[in-house]
Length: 193
Image 1: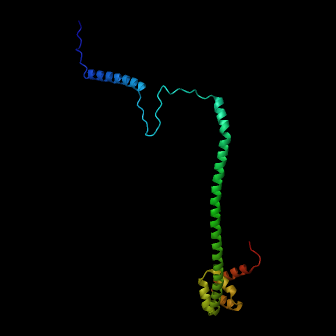
Image 2: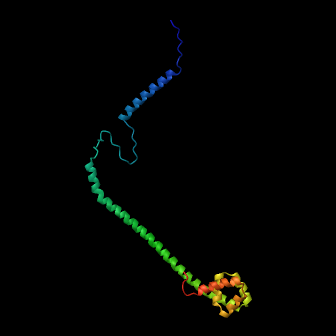
Image 3: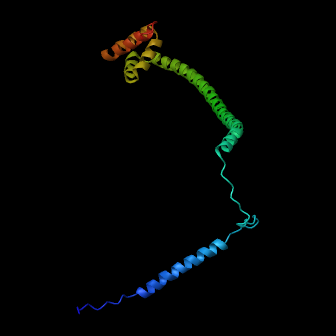
């Protein structure tokens, strides 16, 4: 007789077998209890749930019923969609009207500001021209060489031609040439572009 190794006892096999058997029995018993008597929650003031005997299975609608339903509500759906679009257009129009009014207000305000600015500049130009007309030619030439070239040319154009000539004579040659070029192009009656 051959010698066999003694069997090793399986530890914890019995509790595992008992636990799995118990779990299976509970699942089966619980499944039957649920099918027979399910727990249902009812909200306060809500309708009582229907018992399984009261529920009956309705047959699924066929294609013709679905098509009839869709064709019956198509006009109402289209009308509702048009009404929603019309409402949205009215709201958009109201927003546009409000923005147009604000834009018109800003335009009127800007025009008023522009008129005041033009009046101020006309007065300022006249007083600046009078100041340069009263200065000695060498001092006026020195000051005009420091200001913006277009402004200096505009002042010289408004001065008496004799006074402007004397001031240009006192200026540096390059500055006088630049001012003369600007004055000549401004005096042209035809648009150079």
